[in-house]
Image (tube, rainbow over all chains, first blue to last red):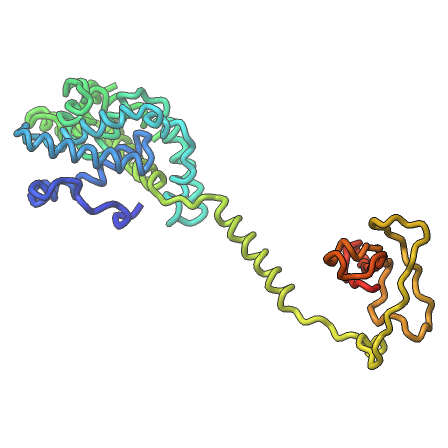
Amino acid sequence: MSDDSLPLALPLPRWVADSSEVTALYRELRKPLLRYLVCLGLSGDESQDVVQDAFLSLQRHLASAGAEDNIRGWLFRVAHNLARNRQVSYHRRFAEPLDAGFEILAEQATPEQAVLEKEKYRRLLAAVRKLSESERECLLLRASGLRYREIAEVLGMATSTVADTVERAVTKLAEMCNV
Amino acid sequence: MCDREAKLVAWLDGELPGDEAAAIRAHVGECQTCRSRITAYEKVSEDFHLYCNAVFEAGTKPRTLPWIPVLATAAVVIVSFIVYFRTRVAPPRPASAPIVSAQPVPIPAPVSTPGAAPGKAARHKPAPPPGKPHAPQWEPWETSVEIAIPAESVFAPGAMPEGMRLIGELRIGPDGSVRQVRFRQ
């Protein structure tokens, strides 16, 4: 999905939307949040709903003079929990074939490269499916650019546990993909 | 197995404190095994990042419902057929089969059916003999049907003489449908 197809209107009242800091936060985190939610298994529409709800929660959080440090981790945690509430679609993505995604990956390649790319991502998908839920979530949040302490806040873990989980997940992927 | 391998991912992610990171950096410069591990971890992390992008693109790409192109194609075909059959020009009739005669066609005598009930009665009319001077100028048909209808059932009481009947002639097309209807006394 192109950025143009995403709603640009900030779902916040004017007194909050006027804040350049919040607007910048929305522009910076909208796509990573959407990507994380889609990778968790939500559809594009569901993900947009969750992002809107997360920013509405941010509005209430700021209006009630809530803590303003680590807003990025806070937003991911709210979005993660909202996605968790949609249990039907939460585990869907990793149970479905991703042929459409592979086609997109191979769009720019020659036919030979496309075959190799598809095979590589099929192996990666098979490896990702063998990871535990926490390992997948840690990897997704790491791929979204979150630091370990932010991942720990989102998933309610200790930072050292996040480090161990990420290490274990990356090692498994490398072994299963024969990298 | 190198005892520093457990920290390599955290070191790659910049999550180790300064002194620990410096120790790992120094170790990696000397350990070939850790260097190859780091290369593998960087590669798989990049692949996973691309994989997430692909999932995101596939999950948010606008989808065209599969039956819409089928319906659109079917609609175009149907409309094309309709336009073609409605606008095509019929071939001219052969000159040997004139439809309009200069002389008025006399109405034949009413056909009476002895013993027929005053209600509706139908019988098949025999085909007119060839060469008859005042044969109807219709196109040849396969079958004709005549129906006797009491005039009282069509006109108001008293408007027509009592006992008069009308004969309806139906022209039947090759497909069995009624092509033309006319009434005579």
